[in-house]
Length: 287
Ligand code: ADP
Ligand code: MG
Image 1 (cartoon, helix red, strand yellow):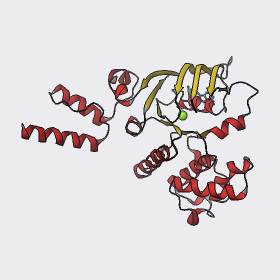
Image 2 (spheres, protein in one colour; image 1 turned 60 degrees about the vertical axis):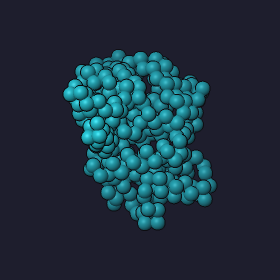
Image 3 (cartoon, helix red, strand yellow; image 1 turned 90 degrees about the vertical axis):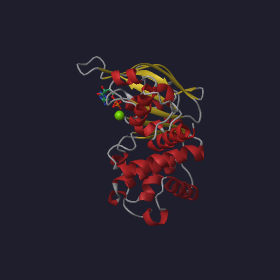
Image 4 (cartoon, helix red, strand yellow; image 1 turned 180 degrees about the vertical axis):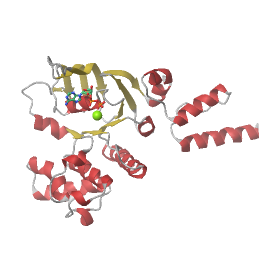
C-alpha cells in the first residue's frame, strides 16, 4: 500500500488570532513495505501529518492518496481508511479505557464486526507481537500495568486491526531506556515478520538511524530532508542548523576521517563502530 501526499497544507484555527500553519506544502511518497523514520523538533508538524494519514484530520489544502484512493474525498468512508492505516497516538495509554487488557485490545476488531473466535485469535497474536503474555495479562486491568506494558496494550489494540500501514507517534516517549529498546526491537520484528509499512515518529536520531530505510526530517511544517540514513547524516550541517544532531557515534566516525582513518560511512551504532575500528586496527597490525 503506497502513500502519496500532494501539496498538503494544514492550518489550525484559521482566521482567528490562534491561526497556526502546522503543515506547509508537504509532498511525499512512501512505498509499500517501507520503514520510515519521521523526525523533527516538537512543533515541527509530525503529529499533524500522521493524523492526516488515517483521516483524523482533513487537509486545509492538498491531497492524500492511499493505494489510488484519495482519502480526502468526502465520499470515502473513514472506517475503510482506518482498517488499512493504524495510528498509535503519542502517549496512547491515556486512551486505554476498558476494564481488561483483552477488552481493550478487542475493541477495534469488535467494531469491525468480526466473530468472537477471530477476535480472540487477533488479540492473542497482537499480544504475542508486543511480547505481552496472553494468559497472564488478558483479564488484568490495563491500569495496573507498568508504563511499558500499558503502551504495548495500546500498540496491540492497533495491531489487532491488522493494518497494512502502522504509524507510531513517539512510541518510546517517556519510557526508561530498557523499555525503549524493547519496544523498538518489537517494532523492528513487526516490520520483518509482517512486511507492513511502518512510520516511526521520533525526535531521537539515535533511535531511528539503526532501524529505518528512509528518514524524513521535518522543520516548521515542511519536509526539510528525505533519504536513507547515510545520505541524511552526510548533511550534518543542515541538521545542526535546525537543531538536530547526527548520532554521536556517526559524529565520531566522521571525526576519525579528518585524522586519516576511513571507516564505512553508514555506521550508526556503537557495536558496528567497535567492529569497524577493530578491523581497522587489525588491518594496521597486518600491514
Ligand atoms: P509535532 O508532533 O512535531 O510536535 P504538531 O503536529 O503537534 O508537531 O504541531 C505542529 C504545530 O501545530 C505546532 O505549532 C503546534 O503548536 C500546532 N498545533 C498542534 N496541535 C494543535 C491544536 N490542536 N490546536 C492548535 N494548534 C496546534
Ligand atoms: Mg507530536
